[in-house]
Picture 1 (cartoon, helix red, strand yellow):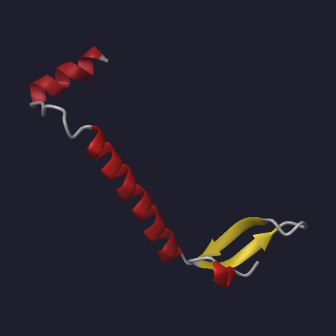
Picture 2: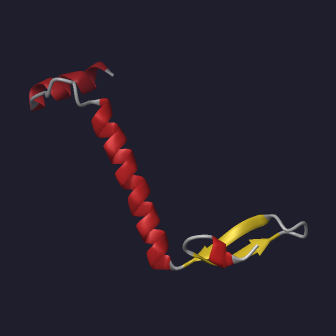
Picture 3: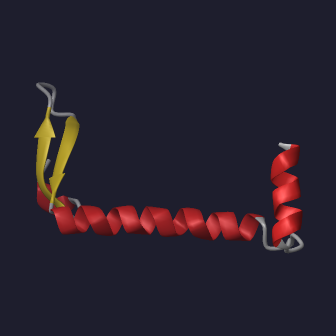
Length: 67
């Protein structure tokens, strides 16, 4: 397999059977991928609570005490 067939990949490290085991990418590309994953997680978390009623500080602290 050639790295040019994979976005961001600069080098592919394979085992003796030719299976890709590791991928070498540019650090800035890596940071961008991490940011995208974090953004996706934030979006999913926001969608999960979008219909919930906002709490004031006292209500939020009371909810935390219940846990």
